[in-house]
Image (cartoon, rainbow, N blue to C red):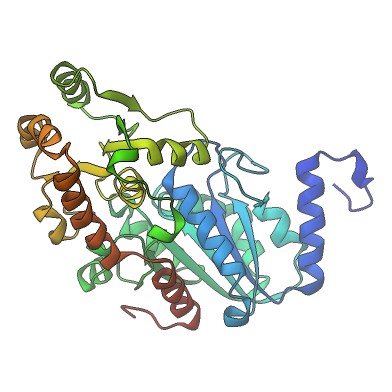
Length: 356
């Protein structure tokens, strides 16, 4: 389509792409792009990317670049997420790069699934490769939020088009062994998380409510059925169909939470920061060893089936509840904090990598 096309006749998404891309073309010599899923489905990964985008924009004095968010190539072009409050407008990567002036530096932050699935390789083999030639230096950073989704072979494909690094979201795999396995520079980034982002309520303010993650699991029906039969006064709510803000309000009311996901995820962490007690099964891929010592983190699902009901009864008292909550809260404090995250991000942009 020619640039002489009447801009008012174009769809809103394309008008936005043109407006922002034109501004970039006039000013940017260094550009940072965060690639994000083109779907509205709520996920912790999207929230993490949105936080990285926002915090990176605030660090322009460190990296000296313009920062934009674009849809992962090959996915639907989504203008904006509506399930959480934000002002992040999502652009078309091809449109941005086509309209940019020649760049000194281009950094693409890539979700690990987009690299592992071959989506990035497909884009690079078609439109992406020629577009990247507009940049003197190309840097791919693969955001590893789930270590089980990364693929070393796909990482090697990216090295044909530019420098490759990985950043990690969990301490459990932020180590030299992961760096050696992946074969590229690795940096401990973590996630934007900390008690200062939540409103905490105590035992007496909480409802007799257990929130449950939406994740599928072969024992999920058995676990929830057992809890419902043994504790008829306990309200059990599987989270779904909520905005993130509504979810946070729900978490603030709930006394208990149970995750069927990776373990150390939002369904475990956010309830604790809100004053709740979280239950999970230990997963060494995501939890650090210290979490195995917590009384509400079980070694197996069979153990959870045996112990969770009596533990809920035992802990439903102000003293034991506060003690149990405090143990998990303090352990999370060793890993997370807003300023810790920001310093990790600053170090990344300064090239001070954890495992070069």
